[in-house]
Image (cartoon, rainbow, N blue to C red; front, side):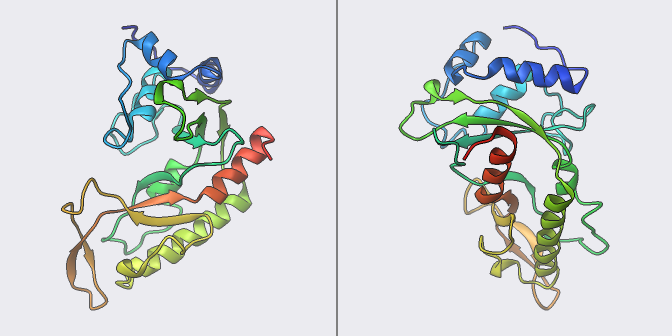
Length: 225
């Protein structure tokens, strides 16, 4: 198995990612001596981990961008053959307590989305996992308008959590961001605060980017309809 060097600059990283464009997941995994799983239900993060390895990401599970020295996060984006996102994109775990003094500017999610290497993957369910094709990657930072939308959603959703409304948050809240349960199973619980300021246990939550927003990014950067 070849050990991949950490890319020293953004140009090197994008060149590496572009070299994967048009390859299948099976071809990339085979070059690394990695076995492709039969399905991704139990290995949901497998595609991201494969690309992290091939591209030389070094953050691992630390709460920082995947390429910390470049300040770049890696996000895979499953799409249809027509270039439409197949699912929302997980960004990071949502904090459910100790939010006094939290602002968008000092939030973990803002840091995660400051600079992102997006790697689209044609991944319709009818396509076997080894045959799914890596598309054209692009590096993105939010425009002032995009960041404004994310910051507004973050504020609305964070206010609901602080006011003890976490259980009332649905995927319909937010224009570009949403909060959804993020847990391996229903037994996984974390602490939040109710309307009376009392702690209680609930499912962990995660911040996700809505498909309408990631489709907007694809159209903007790859000229997809």
